[in-house]
Length: 188
Image 1 (cartoon, rainbow, N blue to C red):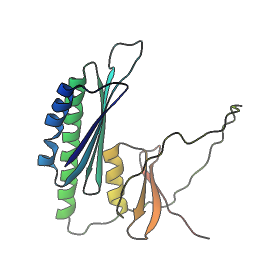
Image 2 (tube, helix red, strand yellow; image 1 turned 180 degrees about the horizontal axis):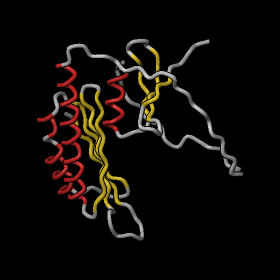
Image 3 (tube, one colour; image 1 turned 90 degrees about the horizontal axis):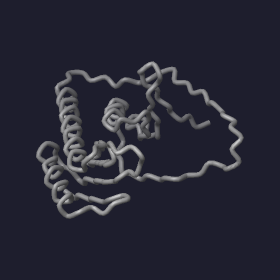
Image 4 (cartoon, one colour; image 1 turned 60 degrees about the horizontal axis):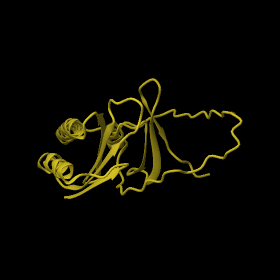
């Protein structure tokens, strides 16, 4: 298991680095094949003195991505809280895997009637939008059900994936009513 610990707007003291390694190093006991753990510690500068330390953790394990972010007054308490959040996510993930392996006839839910409507805002801003952040990640083709689980584990409102049934890139998103929408490209 590879663990990368980096600081943003701060230097990570050796005492804090060893504390993070000790707390998050135990994750591989609960989750098989943890490939890498990326930890970003940052200190926010604001007028509000509370919740100034932020800890972001991303765990890559066998194609599954678990992510948690927590804020606290003290970096150690933020690490403790983010560790608890990751333990709950791992427990929920393993429970879903167990239920899926025990299912007699699993059905893949396919969202139908997906529609998008674009909203255009005119705010008179002269500056054109630009790409300020790029993310790259490794992934494997998954079913729609697995994509829903991944999106829920990440806590995002959308998820881009390759559908293993169609071998096409799809976008899964959470609708305002709580259901999911699926965007499937149609080459025409």
